[in-house]
Image (cartoon, rainbow, N blue to C red):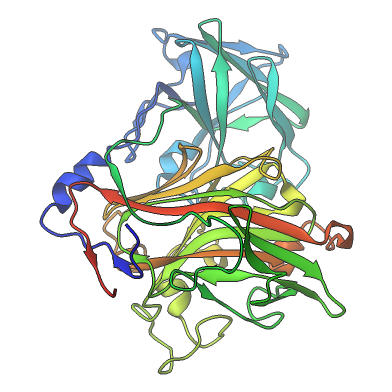
Length: 452
């Protein structure tokens, strides 16, 4: 359906569509060092096997020096802190009988001691291969002590009927709070396509679907690029949207597009198939902002520009959903995040998670959002790696009850892009390629188009 402006309105059939978005299920999950725990997302974490003689899991002390239990009283940055409040510390392996097939493994960590970044490093090995190297809990959680961290590895293949995972220290001892294992599943058939851009052919971007933003250097996040409408920065080529960054005489140039008032939606699914840029200094993003940014603002002047403003609190009050963020100095990790007044990086309560992304610059992957009135799921290649629940805490925690639009951009440098070191000028020009953007809704919902 080609609509210049789509608003997905949730009408009388909302209840059935929400029911169709079933809670997460797991093939196996365990709460290390703790009792059985039933997550709000639908995952049941079994009691630690060393505390549960009837468990089907086998845990082995890899170094023979003793694996100990521990606990953390207060956890930040998570909607379900109980998962992170107990842990195992030490090198250990765990085996679990599972049917052969591909699985997604989500690991839950929190740093229990006030150790410096770099003082606790460990590897995670599954089926004989390193699936996460040099895990540094505190570094990956922005230096926040006792902040919950989740990281997912997708596509781990079991061939012998037993999943074998090891946690091996390199500097200090591993600390692991929990693990959940999910079978790899395709997208549900209940989604119906209602809007898309396939970026077919070559030439100009379809401006009936997208707005091109032109910004100066440093407008937000101390970013080092300016945004332009020039074809060298934005074009459709070989069936892809090309967002290309260049080194200029002064700073850098790049591209940013968004769909506000051309494709806004409330609830549904977004799929974006993209190949990401490589190189230190890149900061690519597929994300969403509210189409009425002032919905929950309290300090903005009439029509004040919310971007980069120190006086207008439209952000984070009215919300932000990051379907994909990637920084070039950390090539093997893709991030999903939500920002709200109650929970964002300034107050140390950021809700976010990451997934393995070791080949994101070599291959296309599908980055997705599933959004309903009661939860947000962020996925990569149909692997759910971040869930944020509506816990009934009001707009400060859940501003996701009004239409949003999609944004695609490639930033250079800035607060996050330069966090791993200076920009590598040898990488330019560098590209983010987008094969398609597709918006879906549940078949039970009713859609209403506005415009031609």
